[in-house]
Image (cartoon, rainbow, N blue to C red; front, side, top):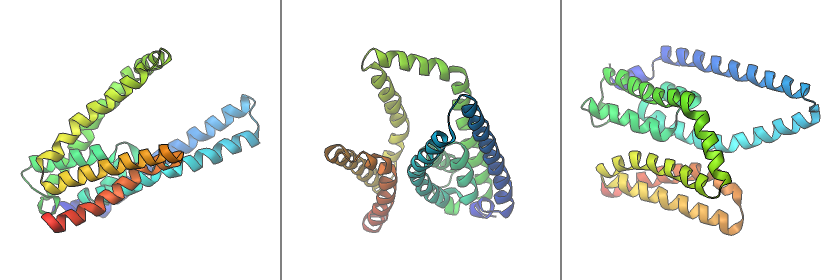
Amino acid sequence: MTFFDVANLPLLFILIGIGIAIVVVMAILSAKKAYGRLQEAGYSKDQLSTVIKSSATFSVVPSISIVVGLISLSALIGLPWAWWRLSVIGAVTYEAYAATAAMQAMGYESFATASANTFGAVMYVMTVGIIFGIIFLIIAGKPIMLGYAKQGKKGTWGTVFNNCFMLAMFAALIPNYFTQNLVYILTFFTSMLLGLLISILAKKTGAAWLNQFNLAICLILGMAMSVVYTNIFA
């Protein structure tokens, strides 16, 4: 069996579907409990209806980038596991990086030529690798957020700390792209420039809503340009 023979097994669809159904039920129960608590606190049904409608609207826009990420990730590791990772916990940047690292560690250059055993390694690395972040968040999440809020009141230190976290993540993930071929490098810089241009355009025109679509646009156009670069340089 090949990598994708296992990655797209019907049994995997069923098991992951059950897992996602459990998460959905938990979310519905939590929302119901929160709705009842807000009613007890004195909020009217009209106020709650307005909050629900606005929350639903703002939830749709960020989900566009997640759907685009699902499409790109499913091409690497199959639809079921990509569906599970991006539906419950995970980001396409981490998931693609972890999956590719596991595949290369098994001695393969692409998922198309990888063996069935490689899929097990990919699942293991992607799952175990992110567990430590969850454990750390349980222990240190509240102190970090309180410290961040405290520093934010003092001026710009809260923003500085937040940017340091982002830079640390970039420093860990980005160098991997520069060890690949020219197509990876050109796609990276293209996506970076697109993100910068969209941010500038949103600021200059006052169209703040563009920032909500920034990731989705960069993913779509970045993937499109990667095809162009592949045809030219690969």
